[in-house]
Length: 253
Image (cartoon, rainbow, N blue to C red; front, side):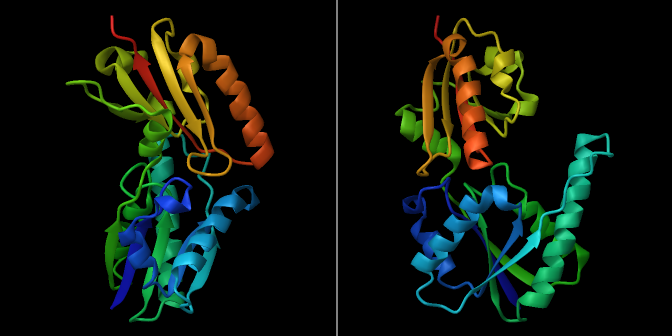
């Protein structure tokens, strides 16, 4: 039976790869990925560097396919993502059947941790539900951008007896800060922190965490909001892509 490793590889620093992830990489015959275009060539290169470093001379291969675009004609965000996932599942099904021998070992290298704001596990389950591929898969956890963000800013994510809320920029709301006091935001392409009442809020922001392009800013949100927008825009123009994460923290009264 085919085997597949879904491997968390951290946020960008090759040193963040776990021993379990290295052991999995050493077994892989074919690494699968969906190509997001030239804008993310840095990410493709890092994947290949990790495999070259830890593949122990194995004759592994890389198989890539073009990532389908989400259909803007579908009004519902949930339905649009569901359709996108179904298209992705069909592509992975084809790659597994055509490129991985019946007793081969495949691998998918996932940024951060596969369980946190990543669709790979949902895609694998969709492939299995289609019934054409017999597959046994394992999930290898990775260091997430949230963990790296806290380490780089030298902060604990949770305060004593406090809760942490993790959400996306799309769903960030003032009520969440009021309820939790500490909110981690991922996948924020619109700088949603600008909509938050800022007088008593600090922000800990990081982009390209763990990589050679890493950027860090922290301090009162009312003082830094415009600067983060400027730095973020310039970095995206320079590299063609950006991955950033931040913590919003209400000051204790």
